[in-house]
Amino acid sequence: MLTLLPLALALSTDAFAAALGRGLRAPSRSLPAALQTGFVFGGVEGLMCGLGWSLGATFSGPVEAFDHWIALILLTTIGLLMIRAGLSGPDSQSMVTGRQSAAFLITLVTAVGTSVDSAAVGTALALSGATVSAAFLIGLSSFLAGTVGFLLAPVLGRRFGPRAEMLGGALLILIGIRIFLDQVPDLPA
Image 1 (cartoon, rainbow, N blue to C red):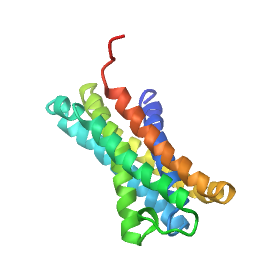
Image 2 (image 1 turned 135 degrees about the vertical axis):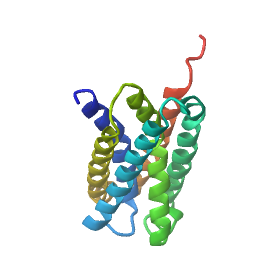
Image 3 (image 1 turned 45 degrees about the vertical axis):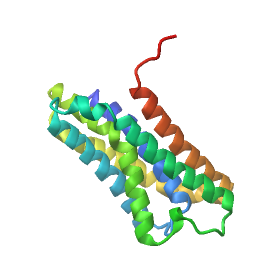
Image 4 (image 1 turned 30 degrees about the horizontal axis):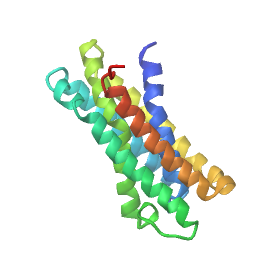
C-alpha cells in the first residue's frame, strides 16, 4: 500500500492535466460534467491497469513495444487541436468544443492517451504479486484528479482566456512526449 498510493497519485497527474485542458472549452461546466469527465479518466485508467494486470507477462513485450507511440500520437493530436482553438479566439467553434457527443469522444480519446502507461503498470503489479484491486485504487485516484482538474478549468479560463487552452494543449503534448521518452531506450552518446 505504501508503494501503491504514490504510484496511483503519479499516474493521476496526467488525468489532472488532461481534464484541466478539457474543461477549458467544455460545452458544459457543471458538477455533473466534471464528474463525468472524472469518471471517464478514472474508468479508463482503472480499466487499462486492470487489462495490463490480467494480461500479465504474456503480452507485455509486444504492448510495450508501441504503447508510447499511441500515447504520443493521441495526445499530440488533441493538444494541437486545443492550441489551434486557442489561437482562433474565444468565439470560434472547433472539434474540441463541438457537439456533446464529439466532446465526449475527445475526452475518451484523451483518457486512453493518458492511460496507456497504466497497462504496463498493471502488468508490473501482476508480476509483483499485487491483486487486481490495485487497478481500482489507481482508477479512483484518476477519477478524483480528473474531476478536480475539470472543476479548476473555468477559473483558469476566465483568468487566462485562450492562453489557458493553448497551455492545456501544450501540456497534453508534453505529457505525450514524456510518456514517449520514458519508454524509448537511452540513445548512445
